[in-house]
Structure formats: structure tokens, C-alpha cells
Length: 196
Image (cartoon, rainbow, N blue to C red; front, top):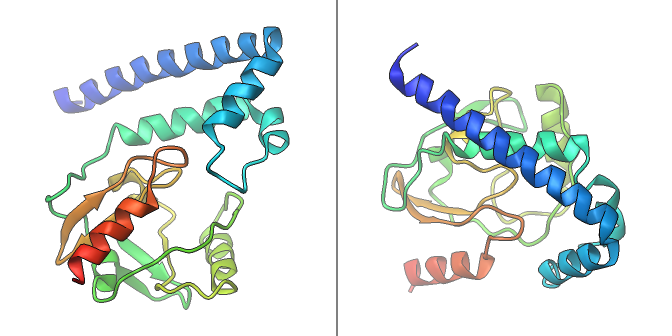
């Protein structure tokens, strides 16, 4: 094991400590000050019309929450994307099962109009089936899925969601991680500037 790998594990250990502390403190606050925590969380999500505190409250600071946040934070340690830098050309899979790469979709503009809630999948068939839900909403972009190795998600640090604008193999825009820190209006501005 070389130094870079050891460095990654040290950073993962530090993130584990941070997430464990965050969840422990959050759980204590949720128990001691439930109305104040609710008020804070609702205020953070007031721009999201689909947010429902009652749907989130049972999961806040749970074991599942801990593992999900830890997974997301560990994945962000491997983020290799920078605005202006080369966009990773990760493998993805069309709904037909055909393998291709993410750069194959840089020919047309993409637009996301609605969110879709999709459960975790255990295999490629589950993933392809979940992606078919997007087709029911008539997206204005190609629909592909990541491989089960999640290479695209890892290299783009896209978990749980992140917006990018790619052109000619380069990253023109890298948004902040969602769901609270991404701004579709910034993507729109970049795309409008490109097409003006």
C-alpha cells in the first residue's frame, strides 16, 4: 500500500469521526429540542416544494442516515473533477443494455425538469428498471445508467446528486453537491451563455 492509498484511508478515518460526531450531536438535539430541529430543517428546505419533514424526520440521524452520509462523504474524497479540467469519460449503459461512455452524450444539450425518487438497486436490472421511470416523464435528454461499479458516480462525486455541464470532453460547470447546495439556475445560465 503506497502513500496515496494510506492518505486516503487517513482521510476516511477523519471523515468517519466527523460523521459519527455529527450524527451523535444531531440525535441528541433531535431528542432534546425536537421543535427547534424541525424549524431549522424546514427553513433549510423551504425552496423545495417536494420536501416533507414528516417523510424525513424518522430517518434523521438514524443508522441508515449515518451509513448514507458516510458513503457520500467518502465518495467525495475521490472527486477528481475540476471546472475547466478533463471530464472523466466513464462507462454508462443505455436502457437497451448497450454499453457506451458519458462523452457519447455531449452532442446535445440536456435539461432536467422534475425529480424522481428511486430506491437503491442491487443489480444492473434493478438500475435499468429504475431508469425506465424517467422515461415516463419524457426527459429532454438521453437516459443512461452508471455501471454497478459506480465509476461515474465516484469520479464525478455525484452522490446523492450534482449538476455538471460538459462540452468537448471538458467540465464547463461543476455544481455543488445536492440536494441543498445545487442551483439549476446556474446550469441554465451556463447553457444560455453557450447558446447565445
